[in-house]
Length: 85
Image (tube, rainbow, N blue to C red; front, top):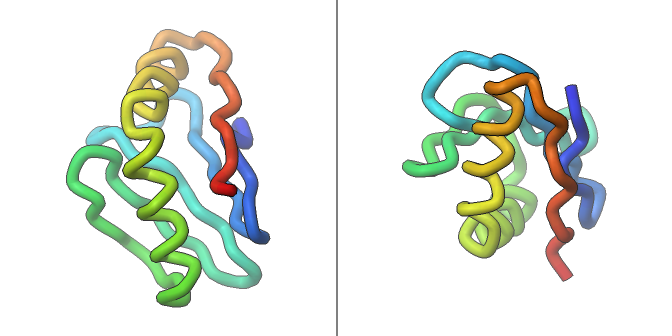
């Protein structure tokens, strides 16, 4: 599971050949969530403040996330995405 980005204790991952719809996984402390890239649907639990930061990051990097989804679907390496600053 490639680590795509990391910021403020939040780690973003994507799995190779994962199920649709395009999404990424978020880990923060003992919390885990899955978030769809296009719709922003959340499955799992995450503190509100961490989730707000993840959505801010998602808005900035949606195209890069979709590109990584395609790359991983084609068994190519994912590219790192800049953290939220």
